Image 1: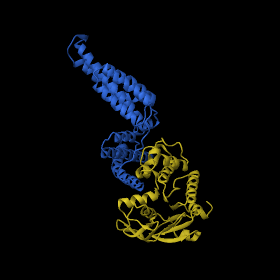
Image 2: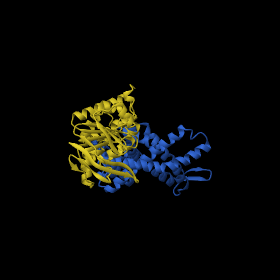
Image 3: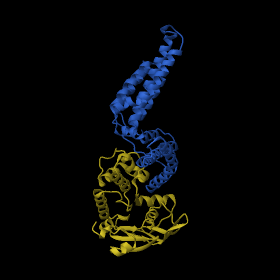
Image 4: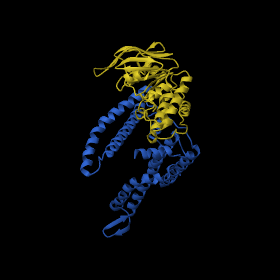
Length: 241
Length: 237
């Protein structure tokens, strides 16, 4: 999954790019959460869905799937348990009130709008690029470096897992359930040692290229000032009007 | 311009690896470092890049003794590039561009230009946005070389550059080494590939049991066999 998402991020060509994309998304997220008007959330949902679809196509819909699957039952519960106001629908013992519909609609719209903003950011921003933007936002260097380091550590762990699983599969390590359990036990045991050894070698390679504790990040140039201005302008107008 | 060691001693967990090694690579030459598995080739290369500190003896670059404080190590590693044996150990960033730019970013030079030029040199222009994880073995090898070339080193250390490469990959590495030699860069290559060493190297140095056992421009079949080197190069393979 990490590779799949990373491939999508690297291949995406968003209309708003560079650190500007991160700032626009963060600002939009604040507006979605803080605005008293539903129009802001509708505007955000429409504009960021368009941006995400443009940048990553069908991957946007795939990414939305799991959170929406959680959102729908939550909204059903809200509809069922929120009381107050006129009853609009009655199904056997269940009464859905006007207030419940309003709460569910507000919550649903707010969640979808925030999801669309986050999806655009996640689908079009490789992790190092995200941290490069945060570094420019004056997020403390140790937080950024540590996060990048953890990210690198996860990559090493996943690569090592992949290597061990392939090696085990090549010698019938997953041929039946009993073997599968035994292999998983062996792989888990080797994983920590293997990852530590690999991390040591990577650390050596980094020091060989003058790594001094600060992870460098390649910054992309800002692109898409016009769409950024349009999106933020529309959202800001819906807050004020 | 020389890189050399005098009376270099190093032991790993009490087991001597290098025993008084006097190694020398002269400016603009390609020195091939040969020897059996475990002879100490990689350990010697790591000493030349300051990744390992000797137990005794010294490393000299441009007649200056290497010290192991942060500033000196930074100077040393900017001057002496090290291409690792296994590219998977060397690639530290998700994408090709980010990885090649890693070194130049660390030393604060024009990373974008250096990255572009280095990728061009190894024939990987246009690979900037490719994920390192999706590259073939040969491509990874070339990206790891580009990552070192982007630092514009005066000395270049290669650990088994032809390992796992096909004919085209070996030709690319040979061509890059040739081009770098013409630019006056001093190159040290640790290899088991005697055919490659004879074709590309100016000087052959053989490490035997942690000591320099041989140093000359060429080597006979009998001497190569004595040192446990692969002698396919003489047998017409």
